Length: 105
Image (cartoon, rainbow, N blue to C red; front, top):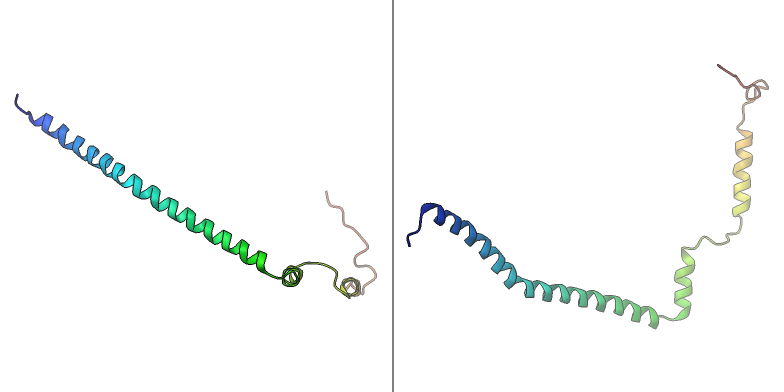
């Protein structure tokens, strides 16, 4: 049985595909282990932050949460009213301006 040139060309193309599949099969356990290591590291970090948050005194938790809140601030309403009054004062002085509406067809 002799090997023809066409058979040889087909065999070479198949060899590269077989080589890729073998490499993927050899690399699969390594990749899965690497992925499992990354996942375990991430879980450990989240667990550590949970533990640190649980160990934090309650007064620090409340203080940290209260800083960024948009709760009541004294004088806020007065500032808003002052802004509205300033806007009203900025209206044009001419009595004819701002009262008539032009309707165009």
